[in-house]
Each structure stands twice: as C-alpha cells, then as structure tokens.
Length: 231
Image 1 (cartoon, helix red, strand yellow):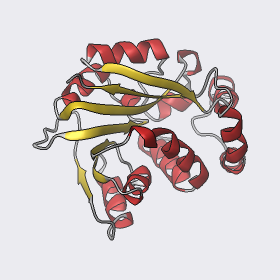
Image 2: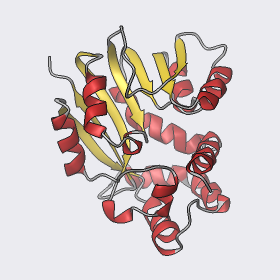
Image 3: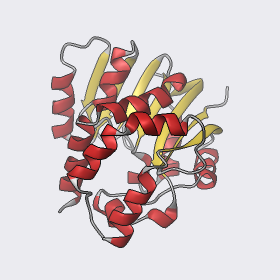
Image 4: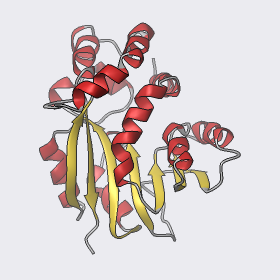
C-alpha cells in the first residue's frame, strides 16, 4: 500500500468515527477562538465541527482531491474558506487568532521551520493547537506508511515550540486505550493499517474511554497541546 493509499484509508476511517471526532474536538475546543487557520484539513472532518461551533475557518490541504471533498462537505456552511496548497510554503495576508494542526506536524520534516512560518501569521497572543502521535518507541510500519517522520514526547514537543519562538502551554496525553492496538498492529504484526473491525470496536467504546480518561491519563497514543505567540 502506498503512502497515499494509507492516508486515504485513515481519512475514510475518520469520516466514519463520529464519536472519536467529537472526543478530539471537545478536547481542543477550549483553545479555539477568533479566526482559525486549519493546516492539513483533509476532507474537512474537523473543519465541519469547528464551523458548526460558530468559528470562522480558513482550511488548507496539500491534496487537491481532499480539498474538493472538503468543499463539497461544507458547500452550504458560511464562514469557511478551503484552499489547496502547501502550508509550509504559503504566505497569508490575514492574521489568525488560532492555528490548528491535527495529526499534521509529524508529516513535516522541518517541524520547527513550519511552526515558525505559521507563527508569523498568528496574532500576538494567538495560539497554535496541535495533536501529534506520542511515544517514539511506538514508531512502526503504521507510522511509516502514512508518512510520519517522528512521534513526540511532551519534552520534544515543548522543545519544538520553543525553537519556533512559541511559548508552550497546556499539554496532555490522549487516547491511552489506543496504545496496545498500535503496538500490536505496528510493532508486532508489522501491519501498515489495522483491521477495520478493530476500528469499529474502538469507535463503539469511545464513551467508556472518555469516562476513564476524564479521571486519569498517564500516557496516550497522542499528545494534544497548545502554544502561544508572545505579545
């Protein structure tokens, strides 16, 4: 399976994972404000959730096919602009209050340079919000198949923010229950995509997982974090 095919698989799975998507969105929602730039919007899964919450969103993705699907999904939604392009090479006339990168930063070789460039179009006091894969020890064919350069720790993510002249803010692990499955499928079985049945079961038990992580989250498959551009 090519990198493109693996990415298509995950985006299609994400489209069907309404409970999981709401869980992610509810975790980032307190950090969203003002005009939002979403980098790597894919087919518009989270663009739609942000727009429905009343946010003004400019969304960009490097894949023209994904952009067309996102435009079709949000054709009747006001306050949304979706464009095709490489966010690491684009410049923006506008200043944004929030920049969102959900499972995007790990796909960019020069993550510091990308964040530094994005910070230039962030309003002073504005916030960058990211969701990234956690745990270098979990890196596997599952990661390589979808073009991940790395997985992060809280320490390495803080360093990336600081080197991009952003002030690290809140950082929390997310989705502890996903760790065993990723380890088994990727590290042990060397799969490049998990079985669809596993994904369906996971989606079914999301309410239970949310309840558990509301009490404790000492580790996770991902890290959700934010950083602020100094005033």
